[in-house]
Image (cartoon, helix red, strand yellow):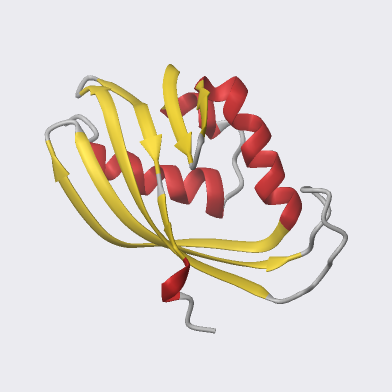
Length: 133
């Protein structure tokens, strides 16, 4: 049985973010995968590593919880929440331990082919209004 877009999306968050497995990025991300992060687009694992390092350098105790998924064919939308202790530093930010970050995101993901278990496109929409403080 091939991995579905929904399964791949869930595994992405578990392996890359919760387990901090940098080596999982090229395992799941196609070389031509386009990542949309606000107004910045990056392509492939090599360009994604900087984002991965920046987030892990800015937050400790990272946990991503997948809340809901919707999938059809090779596409999925995953609603997830992020928590972590802000430790600063990676973004030129000198604040440390300023509190826990809580955000909710919707994350569209698209696989290339059912037989090719890699992500072809990622993006997210941030919803700070849901921050429970």
